[in-house]
Length: 125
Image (cartoon, rainbow, N blue to C red):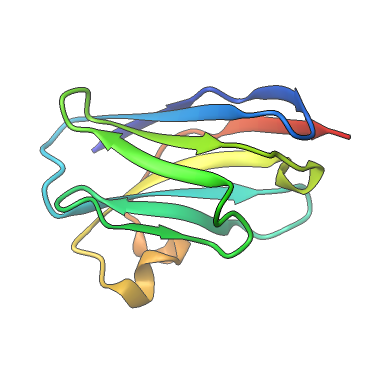
């Protein structure tokens, strides 16, 4: 699976932004697509994930209620709609794909086999 993330940019606190992750290369059945982020000097952290089959979604507590992950089957694209952005959301955002992930590893970076390039989101105060 090849993944391409895009949509980052510079926004102000309180603004919204939508990231996209376009997938290609193989069918996404039984895959989970996740979004992770990494701020300068910090470890990569889980943001959200969606199971391609069934559409079950998962969120980190820090973004629950503000971020929404969704998918478009026809376009093989996963979106991360981010609202009420805060300066602490500033990071490089990565999308990743993992096959057959059980819940215990779905929120961990090590569970994912394929990674896209990052897209930078900067939220100014």
